[in-house]
Structures are given as structure tokens and as C-alpha cells.
Image 1 (cartoon, rainbow, N blue to C red):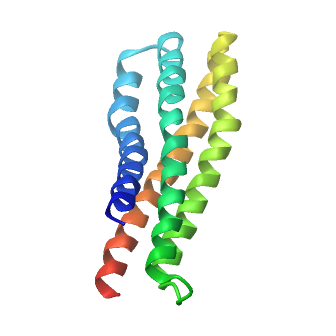
Image 2: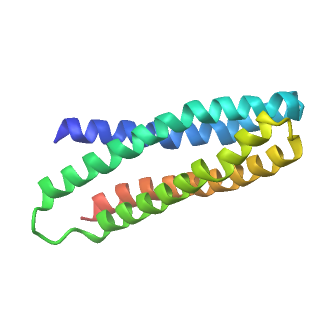
Image 3: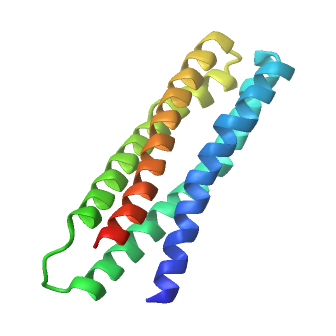
Length: 151
């Protein structure tokens, strides 16, 4: 159970921490220092590498989450806070899947065609959805801690 929890926490740290770094540190620095012909390829490469780790994190989070859920509760009623965490994780995953297959693919195509305006639009969509997922990730952490204390 402890190994599952460790892998679960590592998945959350990688995903939420990566979004925090991208949104709070990389985004403002890249916008301040780079013009679109340099900035957009940087984002395509950075996001491409990060998204590989997000896929791994999602697999780890759901696998370990369901394992811990089954181990802790079996056929007993699952606490509401645990169900809330699973629901938020599912919403975050759906948002990520959309980001990966729609605006990230559009960003990649725009960068490949040197269409900086379209790339900027795609990146702006990604930015808004990453902000949403970052807030949902923080909400999940709050639910986990507060729910665990109250349970």
C-alpha cells in the first residue's frame, strides 16, 4: 500500500508541479524574452516532453488510485472525499486528452508551417486549459487533505 501511495504521489507531483512550472515560471519568461518564431517551437518541444510524463502520471494515478481504493474499502462504501478526488482526476484527464489531441496538435502543425498567429491561438487555448487543470489539481490536494482529516 505504501508503494502504491508513493507512486500515486509522484504522479501527482509530476503533473501538478509541471503545470505550475510551465504556467508560473516558463510562460512569463518565454513571453518576455522570445519572439513567436523562437517561443512557439520552445513550447512545442517542452510540452511534447512534458505531455509524455503526463500520460505516465495519469496511468500511475489511476492504477494506484483504484488499487488503494479496492484495498482500503473493498465492498464498503467509499467516502465522499475519495469519490470527489476521482471525479476531479477524471475531469483533469479529459481536459488533458483534449489539450493533447486538439490544441497541442494545432500548435505542432502551426509551428511546422511557421504560422505564428495560429500557433499563438493554440498556445493560448493550452494556457487557459492548463490554468484550469492546475486549479483542479490544487483542489484535489485540498480535498485529499481536508477529507482525510475529517474521515
